[in-house]
Amino acid sequence: MAGADGDDSLYPIAVLIDELRNEDVQLRLNSIKKLSTIALALGVERTRTELLPFLTDTIYDEDEVLLALAEQLGNFTMLVGGPEYVHCLLPPLESLATVEETVVRDKAVESLRKISQEHSPVDLEVHFEPLVKRLASGDWFTSRTSACGLFSVCYPRVSSTVKAEIRQHFRTLCADDTPMVRRAAASKLGEFSKVLELDYLKSDIISLFTALASDEQDSVRLLAVEACVSIATLLPQEDLETLVMPTLRQAAEDKSWRVRYMVADKFSELQKAVGPEITKNDLVPAFQNLLKDCEAEVRAAAANKVKEFCENLPEDSREQIIMTHILPCVKELVSDTNQHVKSALASVIMGLSTILGKDNTIEHLLPLFLAQLKDECPEVRLNIISNLDCVNEVIGIRQLSQSLLPAIVELAEDAKWRVRLAIIEYMPLLAGQLGVEFFDEKLNTLCMAWLIDHVYAIREAATCNLMKLVEKFGAEWAQNTIVPKVLGMANDPNYLHRMTTLFCINALSEACGQDITTKQMLPVVLKMSTDQVANVRFNVAKSLQKIGPVLDSNALQTEVKPVLEKLATDTDMDVKYFAQEAISVLALA
Image (tube, rainbow, N blue to C red):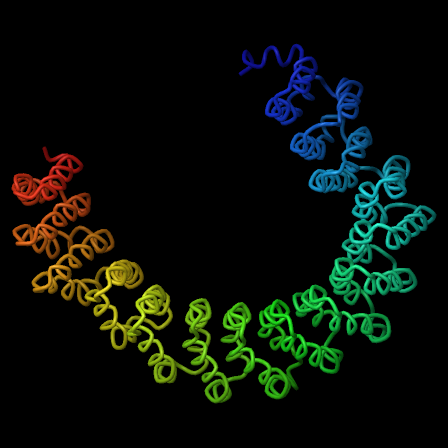
């Protein structure tokens, strides 16, 4: 390695300059990625005096090169001589924080935040804080947006006069003429609030929060909703009603659906932040409105939060609030016109059963689950079936089988083959949730019936389903329950069903293991090699090739080889071809 890098260590700066000036972007990118090696070769002194000034001067490149540079510089502290020299990294990163490409600016800000922790308090005030001020009062909006991400990292460690300046800069940026800057300020409002003293939080931040939450741009208003969570967490309970709630009420009824969506999306966090009393009086009606919103995206976001919202309600009034306020809205959403809304609800609605208990679940929720199981949208059905286990815990398997299973069986025998296919795909999931005894009693016959379905896609999926079931329930279960039925189909008068036996053996051989495959499955496959239908015979050759690796060498030589050799001389071209292929793959020639 030393030899290969010999030139690099002799003239690293020359190599870098050559490669950085090369027309090929990839070469420039590679040289930037080798920056740490070059800095090590140069030593800390030359890195500070030659490499960093050079990098600062050459920032006019492709975005991907600049992105790599911004990332590298964040890990450069030790390469410039440790924390006491870390301020040398600020000039190149400052330039990168002002470029036009957002991804590069974000990475530069991330690196600046990282190295700010390595500045001593004195260096922070002498070097870092002036950089933040320069960015905050830059002519271009790009530098001002970058500044927003740096206030919170330097604020806690500077003197009170500098703190006052930082607060003033942040106030100015919150009222900037450019929406992009206000957006950046709004996105960092919550983070900045966390490092501020409580008095300033009340005097400064609340007024900024209120202004941003009623900004003319909805992209700024929706970010203020996010800040609302942090601010509400920091304020004492008695101040919430006057300082935060008016703005939050306004956001929940905002004219822009994006803002309402944000409120719905952050609802559980808001609920935890404002506490039980305000939740009861204010958030419950707001949540009802969001569940009935005219925009489907908002309804879907709110539906997603139904379970979490109900879980976090105060225990003494939880059931009453759900039954009188939330459940009526949920009932409407079950038959919503938008499938995303129904799907979002179906993914969480089962969780309500644990909150409401057995009687309410049977009376109020089961009819909803049944309606969703019969929904025409497959995602809704899947979400219900995927979460059956939590209902099972509350109402027990018997009750579940009486109500939901008939619906599942109905779907399994549906006239449309795509509906049948969807149910097959859920079978392993159902089996895992309901357990082996229940499965054998109620669903096993269904799974076997699919193997002789008149649609090939169903037979294929049913084969795959058997394999997954065997993986779940084990080889012994397969030997007693599945294998005899599958092998019984080998004598079926319909050649398509005989072929399904072969497909099942292919799928099951690995899961069942050598013993079952050799003793029970192999004889059936070998017997089918004399079938009258050529399609069955060439599938025998394919099956032997598939199960060959599971068998021991004795069975391969004495039983499989003679049959394949006989098939290799068959009158049918395809049978010959697949038999010869199996012989060569299994190395039996």
